[in-house]
Image: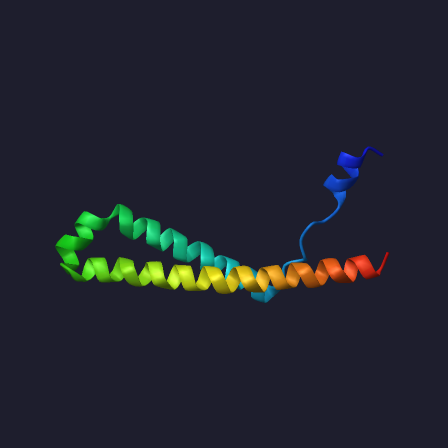
Length: 89
């Protein structure tokens, strides 16, 4: 079997747990909410006034914080899984 095909068939990430799946869905939802609020900035300004910018700033902070936490947890799970897979060989 060619090396590229062997590498293609080798899993490169840990199986996704329920917790990681939930974190990923929250992460995607936060990005969608942030994108939506930015696209609808003018109507939000009319509706909320200056609080619209606070809403977007809060979403940006929450998204950045959640991203850092999610990526650290995901990286830890992948590293642990790859280490265990390497020990089995």
